[in-house]
Length: 225
Image (cartoon, rainbow, N blue to C red; front, top):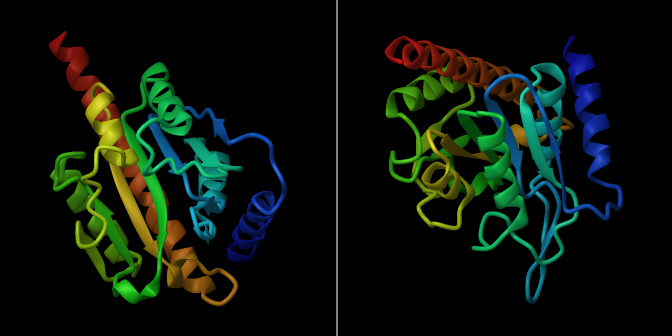
């Protein structure tokens, strides 16, 4: 099973090595969660090229395939930066898609270097973008699958209004969002396959937790109405 998962991931990752004219792809699912990978490919800065955040796009494709979540991932950004630019077609499309399909949770995947000292840093706009109780469940899932250490708003807080997590949770009616900054050690299936598979197990659990929370909330709203 592990080898099959990794083969899928490698296949998806090759998709991001190709030349694409489209800025991004968006895929529809059937559960109220969307996985976003805005930096799956490089971004051109003024004086250098910022590398893509490896395997974030492959993870978004994988969970669309395996769990049928909605997904969106960059393919050709040029100088566009979906997590920094105030006006951005990626963010606008993501917001429109969440509202059109009644999506309740956005998981925005990013990559970080190992130098920060965390496995995952959760950006929640200082607990404004998502229910803190749900964040507790997310931390438990990451700890259970040994994706540690986990920090919250340590380095990448998602406080800027142009950041996807902040933008979506502010403008999306009843939509919650969280930014996951994942260290390189846990995004390296070639050299750290066990850690990468642990990450997949943790993310799968987080998606299922969100699906359950969304369904429970829908039942409550139905009873109130």
